[in-house]
Structure formats: structure tokens, C-alpha cells
Length: 418
Image (cartoon, rainbow, N blue to C red; front, side):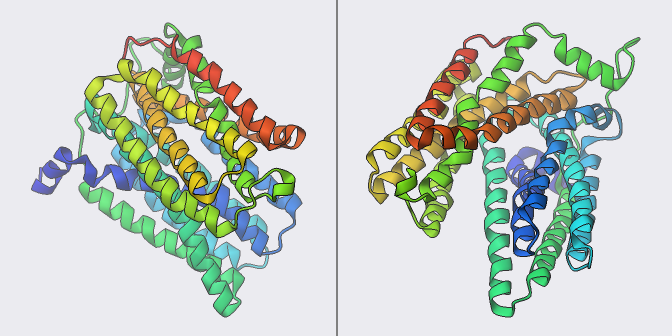
């Protein structure tokens, strides 16, 4: 084995950030930036609303997780998926300039969504195979941090690039074509980088069902849902971020809405700075600190305090809705909430990795993250309706009350693997 690969095994900082940056970019481009694309291309809102179905592959990805487990290595899946996504980005760029751009671009986004969800399965599986249990905990905050940075780079940086091109040239379709070609070029570079620098874990091999154990699909799902305490595990996955799932959809509308509607009436650029500077820095710090604390103190000692760190700062939005504080206090409260989110989500991620068992670790983690996606999607979809019915003040109180089931669920999760 070459010297560079030996160094990579010793220093996961080289590949963990790029792997999870590659996870975040296609997710945001498909589910967030696509809406902006279609709005600027004068697509009716009735059609834009249908793009919410593009989220489905991330919810149902456990259905083909066993295939990723049973065929080839996770390393090969990662590199191949990144090459394919570069191709789909190029297809999206071409589709946007076509006469029937809407159905063609939707087709490209569907291909991207399924390939990206598959890439997520392989990346998470590779992470668990390449790092020790202690290493998984230590880098949990790093992976979450760079996933979030990918979201900022995609929903912020690439949209800004498209906007600048549009303002200077007036070429709307061409600006988006350039953005997707740029994303494709980035993924070609990522595939080449990972093909050279990802390590070759000895455990990274196709899984085999136990003797008489039937198919990989049956083995993966059967072993996951027949484990002791599975009802408590599923309840924890669905409830741990219940309050946060409600908050995340309405936090920025609250900051932007006019005071007559119960919001703070902040300018768009101020909200961007609050989340893009202070909030991002606090999120990074919280995620890294959370992973470090678990690696030093252990999951059992950290989970309850970290669950409180995730949920208690939501009270800041209750305060803001009632007191309407100044800008400095608003920045501070957003920073505290984001810091707590980073800490609390690190613990959640570590637990999902710990409960994934051989020989189906990748599939088990995919099932857990699929349940996690469902736990975020359903409450998030209801949050807007609840806010409109009750107003921001009562809504944020409801959010805080909904954090209680998740904290209680922490007390009952099986901890044999932690």
C-alpha cells in the first residue's frame, strides 16, 4: 500500500470532510435550489409544489441498502456514485436550456436524488468501516459540520453565482446551466480525489447472509426489527428531534415576517448573516465539541445532557416572539440554538452508528436514517399549518412542549452497544 494511503488511515481529517461535503451538495441542489430554479424560470407554483416528492428517495433508501451491503465494496459505491452524479448534473444543465426543460430537468433531478441517496448509504457505511468506534464518535461533529457547510455552499454560494450572472447578463437559463455544470465539475474532482485517497478498510467487503438466512434484504430488515428493544429505539429516532423538526421550518419565516404578523421583520441579508456567520460558527463549534466529548466521556454519560443542549435553547424563540429583543440579543439566541443543535445532533448520529450491527451495518444505518428522515419530514410538513392557526408565540411554546417526548425517550433507549 502506498504511503499516502497509510497517511489517510491515520488522519481521517483528509477524507471525512470531503465525503460529507459530497453528501450535502446534491441533497440541497435537488430539494432546495431546484425550487429557486423553477421560480426564476416562471414555473407555476402548482408545479413547483410537486418537487417535494423529490425528497422521497432519502426516506425510502433503506429499501436498497441491503443491495449496497451485498454488492461490491462501499469504497467503490462512493466513487461510482460521485461519477454518476457528475453526469446527472451535466444532464440537468443541458435540460434547463431545452424547450421542454421542466420534465427533462425533473428527470435529471430524480436520477440525482436516487444516486445521492445511494451515495449516502455507501458513505455512511464506509465511515463506520474505516473508523474505530472511538473514531466514529470523535469525527461525528466533523461530518455533520461539513454536511452543513455543503448546504451553505449550495443554497448560498451557488445561488449567489446564478443571481450575479442573471443580474449582469439577464440570462436566466444559462446561469443555472453554468451552476449545474460547475457542480458536475466539482463532483468529478471529488471522485478522482476519493479514488486516490480513501483508505481500504479490511472490513469493507460485500456482506453475506448467515447460513440459511435468506436474502440480504430479509437479513438486514429482519435483524434490525427483531433486535431487543427495537420499539424503544424507533421511538427515540422519531421523537428525539421532534421539537427541532417543527422549529427548523418556521425559524427563518419568523425572523423575516413583519411584526404585524408576529415576526421580527428583519431584512433578508440580516437573517442570512445570522445563520451564515454567527449561526454557522456556533453550529461548527457545537458539532465538533459534541463528537469530542463523546469520544472522551462515552455516550452514556453524554446523551442526556446533549439532548437537553439540543432542546432547551428552543426557549430562546419563545422569548424572541414575546419580547422582540434587539439585534445583538437575536444573534446571540440564534447562536446558542445552533450551538446546542450541533452538540445534540452529534450524540444522535453516534447512537445511530452504535446500533448498526454486522454483517449489515450499512443497511442498519440506512434504515435508521430513513426513520430519521421520516421523523423530520412529517412534523416539518405540519409546522406551517400549526403556526398559521396559533401564531408564532403559541407555536414556539408548542415546539418546546414537543421536545419533552424526545427527552423522555432518551431515558429508555437500549444502551448495550454504547
